[in-house]
Length: 73
Figure (cartoon, rainbow, N blue to C red):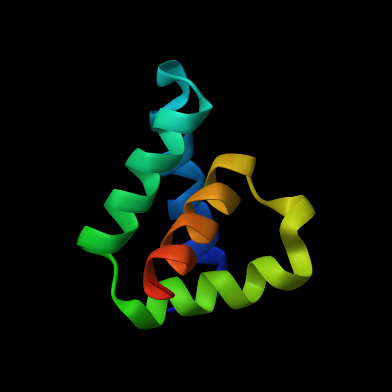
């Protein structure tokens, strides 16, 4: 999938969770990514985030970090 599509979708998911507070939004976005995205999609977004963190919503970045931490447990 094109990275533009992945970033747009991830950003939209974050926007849809704006009203719940940052910590809860991070949890919800991480859960959404884990449930509905393939691991390849998450990995591609994570790779993009490494070099373009300033272009992504902090909630998206937090969700990616949360997913990464869950994999290392």
